[in-house]
Length: 327
Image (cartoon, rainbow, N blue to C red):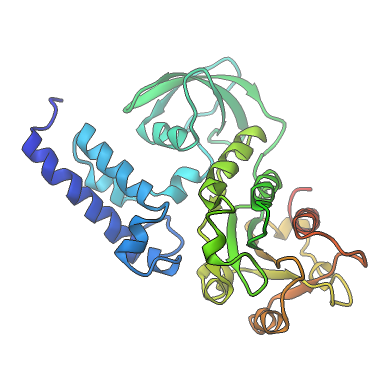
């Protein structure tokens, strides 16, 4: 198709940006929350946030190719692109497969380039490794070279709420939480955490990229969602918390591992939604504990030793994956 006239491009770019912004404000298929409930209270906040990247990508696609309003309206959001990459056919080792435009966008989301490997799931739910051979905007080709022993995805959906830790330790927390199979990571601002004006020093802009690198290293088929830092009072009203099947928070004052005492039978765990909240150094204060308990969160105690917050995150996630997931 011929490139668009310059006059048409001048209309497309602002229109695409406005359309994307409206999708973010009111919510769209695949997005867990409207943008204003994720820490952005005005268009100015939005333009300063990492969410503007989605808008710019949409505008860029509109300039480069034909308009595809329905293509984006039908759920081409970060949530759908982060989901496990799937193929409609039954796959086998040594097979050359065709990939469509959606696959290409999902691979670009993962920063996969030609000759690099990625994980894909066939129609029967088997996981394979494939090497990208041809990459174009409209589609591509890949060579399936290995069938994996099992699924790389946890049967439970774990959301990690982690108070923002100082000394750039959130980078390690996000890396290891991704390797341990969490679906979502939400940095939380609490009384004892790093304050909002300290996020730049903690390299908050690098957190999503850290999750991406970890997902590729451990061969996950999906990418975990990494949100912007948000106050504890706000995240407790979010759908990921209010609609969870189980909410657990670390508390060194708890008398037992009560959150794990009645783990569901293994057959009933698939699709279980769990929220795991970890406080900063020094733990949650009394008001935050009371707030969590009022909303049904159960306490979890990790023995009698005092653990660093980042150690507690990994230990708690491992216990939850052992009790409810695939460990």
